[in-house]
Image (cartoon, rainbow, N blue to C red; front, side, top):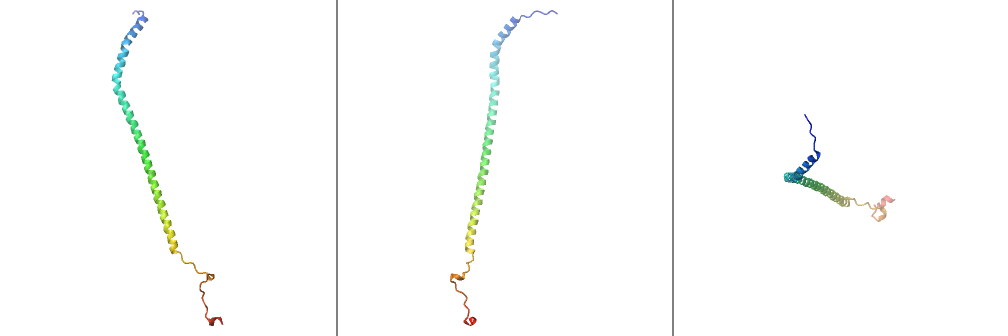
Length: 118
């Protein structure tokens, strides 16, 4: 078997000649073939981003609802405490016994009979 010499210049010129035609054809083919795939992937990532944003908004609303419920519960406890204090102070004024008269207040004293003094 005999090995023939390779003409490197002819080989490079042939590859360049073929690539002048093949590169635009491959580019157009890739553009039309891959365009629907790229658009579909873009829509998938867009929808995924919208879902993430929607989940984040739902989470924020849930947290705000919990905070609102806690505030309402705190207000209810404060109102109940104020009502209790009001009833307690009103009950104290009604239930307090009258103070005993002091002898120096000019209250009538128990008088002794004249027979007891002798």
